[in-house]
Length: 369
Image 1 (cartoon, one colour):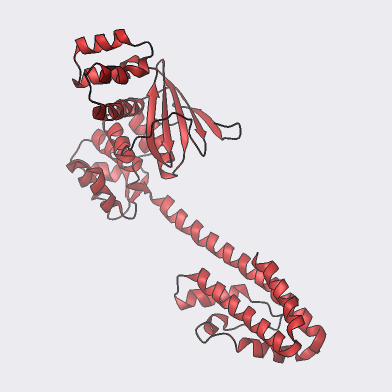
Image 2 (cartoon, helix red, strand yellow):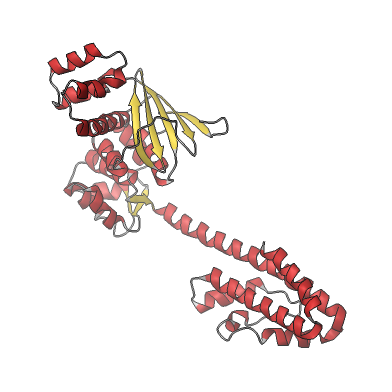
């Protein structure tokens, strides 16, 4: 990690590990999450929103201990391997050398170890965390292909602490809704029957409290399930969905206005140049410019006189776009502006020759950069 990488710290009394993981997964971050809790340090590595590796100082989730617990090696094999190594992280290689583990099975064993670390970490109730964001991860990190969403959901499923569940779901009057495509995504996550049943309630937005009242599972299990569905982005805050759509519309309108204003500055400059040469005949000139606008584009310019230094009235343009029912506003506006610019350039060349056309082309290049 370089000195310029962003780093944030916090305590697990303010959030939960599943919610931290959910945030990094949703935003597609590459980051290193360090968790200090109950006397151990876990480090989880994210690459573009996917968990790819994890390590821990907890001796009970070492590779040898994971293999012993799963029954892949017995106690004698475990002890013999431990006697032959100095660095604990080399136990996998030692087990292969002793013939107790096939080389092809070593990667799968490492995956099981990483999963165990991640699943254990998600039940932490206290402690601290540090997240270091970076465009690249430290050298030597093994890249595993782990099902991140399923791993997060499995972690929430195992949590038995009501204090964590309540922190995860927040208020009982919290309004939730299914994200677009939730049903299709749910198939890849292999939801349980109870989880699928609860997800089915969200044909329309529901509060946590209303789902608890309808569900046949206990309120404890229902709330944990809702938290799990939130953690893997099958549910979201209903208000969030509306606000995201509103912000996107506002941003699109803001960007369109900026684009139109750039061209308006260009049109004003061309207008001034032509006006110096022909005076009031400029208005007849503008009529000729408009003849180059296609019949498909002309309705979007309806209601504009363009006598104000050839400027486009953005408010009128926006009203015309909305009235048309079209959705691809950006391409329509860009096309209209380009057609007008072509009309100006063509008529300038026809009226004043190539030298003046070259001056206008320079103006246009400056705007398009």
